[in-house]
Length: 120
Image (cartoon, rainbow, N blue to C red; front, side):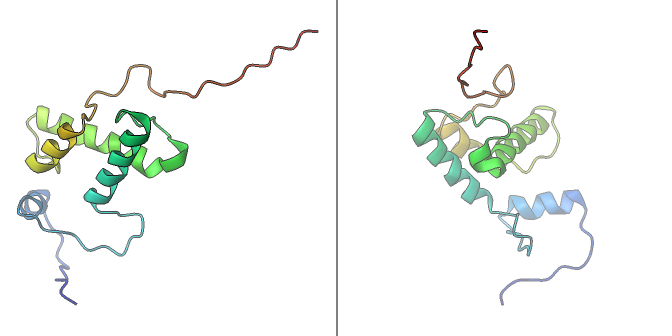
C-alpha cells in the first residue's frame, strides 16, 4: 500500500501544515468520509431543496447535517484568527454553491405537521 503509517502523536500545528499541502489522512473508521464526499452530498441537497440550509438532525442524512455544522464552526475559527481545517479552496467551493455560513435563525427547520384537532 502507498499509505505512510505515522505512529507519533502530531501537534495540531503539524496536522494543519500537512493538511494545507493536501495531505489526506487514511483512516479505518467507516464514519470518516472525505470532505469532498460530503461536499457532493451538499451539492445534491441543494439541487433537491434549492438551498444549503441542511436542518439540524436532518433524518435523511444526519452525517451531512453534522458536517455542515462543522464547516460553520471551522469558519468561526478563521474569523477568530485561529487555525482551521477550512482551506481557502474549501471556502471557495462552499461559497460557489451559496453555503449559508450563519445557521438559520430558529435552529431546526421543522417539517409542517398535520395537526389533528379533536372536536369533542
